[in-house]
Length: 118
Image 1 (cartoon, helix red, strand yellow):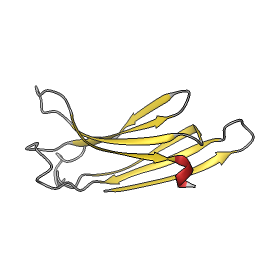
Image 2 (tube, helix red, strand yellow):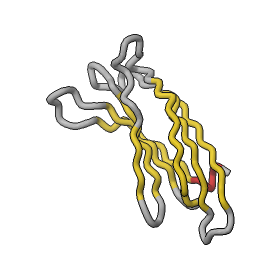
Image 3 (spheres, rainbow, N blue to C red):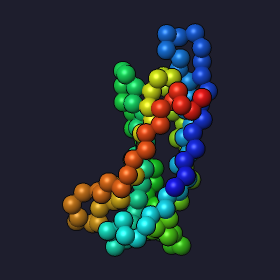
Image 4 (cartoon, rainbow, N blue to C red):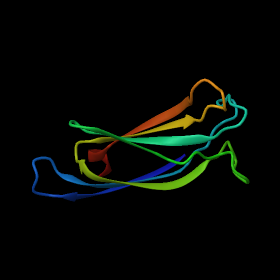
């Protein structure tokens, strides 16, 4: 899959704070991995800081006309303000449960440490 991240910072605070722009582009699933008959995947983006936890969610993709459930394309951008420079960004990929189904299925995760993005 594809993921882009960039950050800008404001100096002069105890911990540097700034804006993180994260673009979730696409995913590629192997058929042997995916057990759902029809996929409708989404990403949950979390900012993990020492003092708080914030979460955003992308649109579900893979069930619309012309969409390939094995290669969902989100191409969504998340702008996260006032993020500490020692934070982590966590992106979880989930598949929506079918109507009347149990719960959403967890597909995977990536953790980005902001100091590594500089």
